Length: 396
Image 1 (cartoon, rainbow, N blue to C red):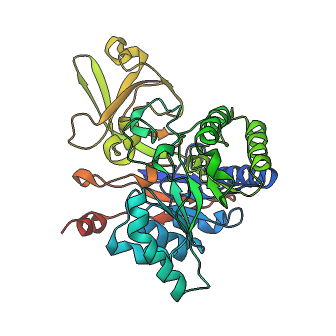
Image 2: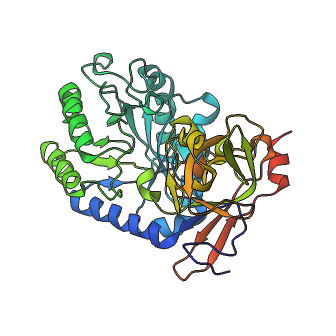
C-alpha cells in the first residue's frame, strides 16, 4: 500500500514506521564521516536491530556490534558479517558459539580473560582462517552523561577496568581496548573523554592494534559538530598511527527516521485532568520515556510541563496521554492540541525507532505495534505484524 509520510493515512494503528529516505540520509552522513576521518563506524544492535532493513545498511557499512549470543548470531546470519562482540560476562554455555559468530571479542575483566582466552586459542587452532581479535574493556572514570541509569563510567560501574587494574604488560592475545562513555553526546564530549583515556591508558595505546570508542556519538543530530568530530578522530590517528579506530553508535543510525503512530481510543477526566487513552503503552512500547525520563514530541501538538494539565481550561485542549495497560503509571504529559481529542484521532510520536523498537515488551497482552518501512516511492512494506500467537508463544 501507499501512504502519505506526514499523516500516514490508511495505516492501521499502532505501527512503528521507519522512513527509507531518512534512514539513507543518516547512513550517507555516517559513511562520509567514516571515510573522511579514516575510522570504521559500525552499527550497535542494542539500539537498532530491524534485520529486514539490513540490505539498506550494507550499502553503507560493513560490520555491527553485539553484546550477546543472539545479537552475534544476528550479525553473522542476517547482516552477513561477523560481530564485534562485548559482554559484561560471558558464560560457558554460550562462549564457543559466540566465537563462531565474532571477529572481535572484548573481555570485561581480567578474570573473564583468564577464564575464556584458552577457548579463543583453541578456536584459532581449529579454525586458523577465522582468527578472532581480542580486547579489554577499559573504564576511564570519566563521562559527561548526567543520568546514572545510562552512565557506564559512574562510580561503582560494572563495566570495564580502570587503569589501576591493568598490568604493565598486557596479557597474551590482547590487541585492542574498548570503552563506552557517551549517550547521545557531542563531539566536544568525545574530545574531553579522549584526554582522560590518553592520560590514563596512553602507555598501552601505542602497543595495540585497535581502539573501539563505543557508542553515543550522535553525529546525525542537526546541531552536532561533525567537522570537529572528524578533526578529533584524525588527530587521534595521527598520535597513534598503529590504531584502527572504531566507533559503534546506535542512535545515530536511526535518529529521527520515523514515528510510532497511535490512535485515541477514549478520553477520560478525573479532578479536571483529561487523559486521552491510546492503543499503545509507554510501559510496553516507549519504555525509555518512563526510564530516563523524557517527554516525546508529538506531531502537531505543543509539549508542555506535566502540571499544565492540572491548570488548563477545557478549551485549551491540554491532555495527558495514557497507555492502554493496567499499570497506574503508564501515562505522560501534558500536550496541547489544536482541537479537542476524540476516539479515532491519530497521535504520532516522533523519533521512535532507535532503542524503542528493541526494548518493547508484551506486558499485559497489550497489542504490539506493527513495524513497517516506508520506501522512497511511498510504498509501505510491513516488516512484522504482531498477533495473539506472538504473545501466547512468549509464555509457557
